[in-house]
Length: 399
Image (cartoon, rainbow, N blue to C red; front, top):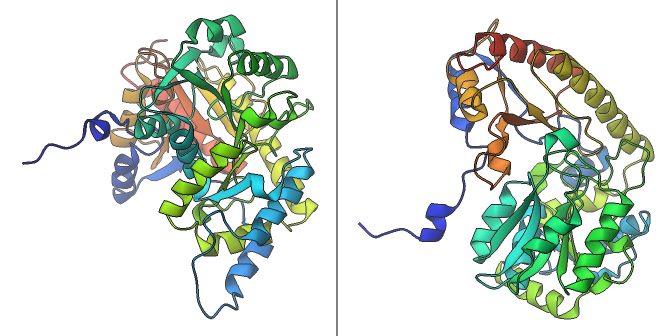
C-alpha cells in the first residue's frame, strides 16, 4: 500500500469538528445536542442577500475574475472605509472564505521552514494552514487568569529568529473573545517594523466589540501599511457561513502578485456566494444593530450562568462570540467526548470544543473548553443546566 504524506499525517484534527461523529451518534439515539462547539450563528441571513440569490437573472453561472467580482470589491472598499480602513479596490482580493485568505497569505509569504509567531490559544486552523505551507507556528502563551491579554512584548522578541517572517493576531480574538488595546497593537507594530515582518491580522469579528473601546485594525497602525495582510470574511457579520466568501487585503505589491497566482490556480471564488455577499453589504443598520444587541445579551447571560456553576470560570469576552472556560475536570477532551458518548440529562447533552486543540504548547488548555454563544438564550439556559448536571456526574471531576 502506498505511503501517505507526512504533511497529512501531522495535520491536526479540528477541535471544533473532530467530535462531530459522536454528536451524530447521540442524535441518532434520540438525544438533543446543544452545539456550542462551532461559530455557526443561528440568526437570519440578511434578506437582501437571500433575495439576490432567489432572483439571479444570469443565463450562465460563469467563472468570476480570479480576484473576485469588481462590483463586490468596490462594495467592500466602501464598507472598509466606514471603519477608517483606507484601501484601494485593487488591494482587495476575494477568497473562498476567510480560510482560503489565511492559506493564500501563508503560501504567498512563507517558504518551507519559515516561522510566524502567534499568541495562543489561537484559531486551530492557523496551524493546519501553516503545515500546508510547510511553515511553522511558534506560539506565545496567554493565560485565562489574565483574561488572555497579549503576553509581554519581550516574550515575542525572544522568539524572533532569522526564520521569523511574521506575527499573526486575531482581533477580536477567536477563541478567547479578547480585544487588543491600542497599547498592545502599537507594541506589535513596533516589533513588525523593527524586524521587517509581515503582520497577519484576522479581523473577521470587527462588528462585535462590547467594551466601548475602539476596534483597532492593523491598517490603523502608522508606518507598516505595506506589511499588513488583513484577513476578512462575511460569514459571521451577515450570518452566511455557507456562501464561503472572504477577502485578503494588502498594499504590498509583490505579495498581491503572489496571491493572485494562487487565485488563478484555483480559478475563481464562488459566483453565487459573491452575489449574496455583495447584496448583503447593503443590509440595514437596524439589522446589524439587532445582531450586535443579541450577542451582547447572550454574552452576559452565558458568562453569568457559567460563573455560577461550581468550579467553572470564564473571563468576560470583549469581542467576537466565543469564550474559553476553565472546568473542574481532569481532561476536557475526555469530558467533551463523555458528554456526547455517555451522558444525557432529560434527553439532552452538550457539544463543546476542547481548548487543547487551540494550543500548540503541550499540556495547555487541558481543563478548558471553547464555547460559542450562537444559540438563543432559552437554549443557552438549557445547555448550562446540562453542563452543570454533567459536571456533577463526570467521573473525572476535580472538585
